[in-house]
Image 1 (cartoon, rainbow, N blue to C red):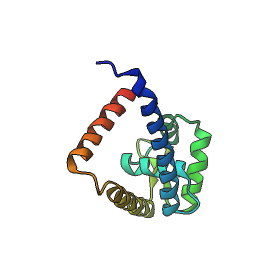
Image 2 (image 1 turned 30 degrees about the vertical axis):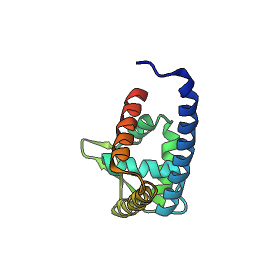
Image 3 (image 1 turned 120 degrees about the vertical axis):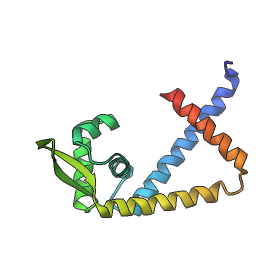
Length: 145
């Protein structure tokens, strides 16, 4: 069934607002990890923590940016002791980037803080509404590709 076109502007407005708030929250969480980290550094550290060590080229492709953008983030995170480089065992010429134990610890603390905020904001919602929201977001993410 095709959605009513008159409802789409409201969906677009709400999504736009959600994205702005998500960016602001990401910036806030980034600063909780370290005051010198921006949202891009937070995303990079989070990806390396979840996916494990990756090459800079792989990260650039994953984020859809050029390698120089990744390099700047890597240098900052490395200088702060949150990321480390090591040789790839399968190709000694290549370097893998990975989160340090301190980087993982700080990211986990920020994730805990994020979950607490989220629980507080959805605290008045009933379980059915939260489950329905999760299902709709899953469908939206699948539709967006």
